[in-house]
Image 1 (cartoon, rainbow, N blue to C red):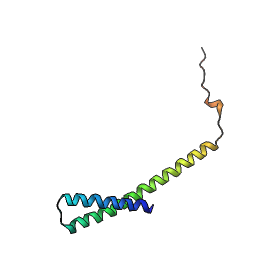
Image 2 (tube, rainbow, N blue to C red):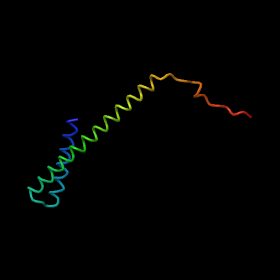
Image 3 (cartoon, rainbow, N blue to C red):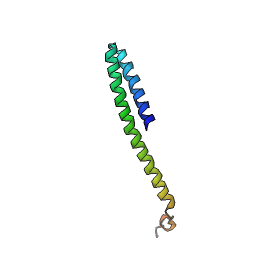
Image 4 (cartoon, rainbow, N blue to C red):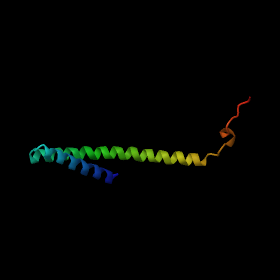
Length: 83
């Protein structure tokens, strides 16, 4: 989880710094924008990582339950219509 937060912070910092420098902002303003974006990026990556891990755990649990359940072949056979 920490690595995702670091990736988000690094990406946010670089993107905000690039956009701020493209607008020809002063260095203190560029640094402030980049720092705020790093914080926001780390929070977003933490949220996304949590949602991803939760979804992955649910998928694994569903597969385990499906593998443990007995297969009922009587209900899966196609029904024939009577003429």
